[in-house]
Image 1: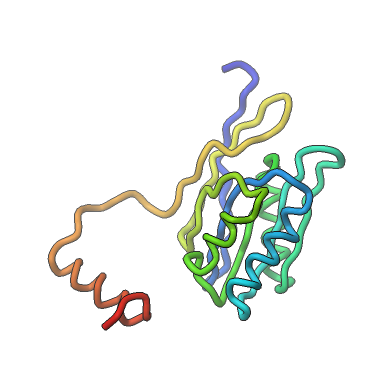
Image 2: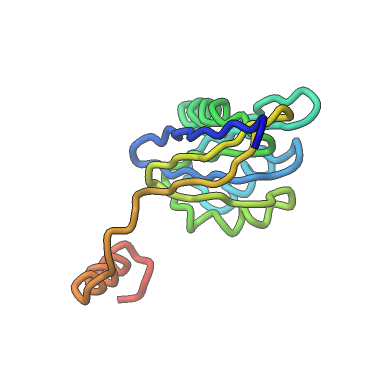
Length: 164
């Protein structure tokens, strides 16, 4: 298609952190996401950045960890895609906060929630930029064996997500 540029943008994810990438639609998104995160897991540390796509078109940010906030802003700057938000978090897992994030009224989509390396496929037109999708982690290598099933079940119990 004429006038469309497609690029792959690598997200920066510090060791021990997870990233949640999504889309929302209103200037109050960063404040509402902040409240959703701290109300879900009080000890969570995080940074949020949100790409405003009208008016001044600024990157809006909040968080309770200055380093994660700085990296979230840098990730959002690299994307510069309208209404996209980036959350970098530690001391919690995405499973602990995703439902609260999904319930924020202005959130329209979650692209990924992971600690894996993330590549974002971004398109650019004469109007602006948008996210086409994400590459979360690596290509599938096979099908789990009986031994893999046992390891998975054991691991989930070791970390407290299933009963013994």
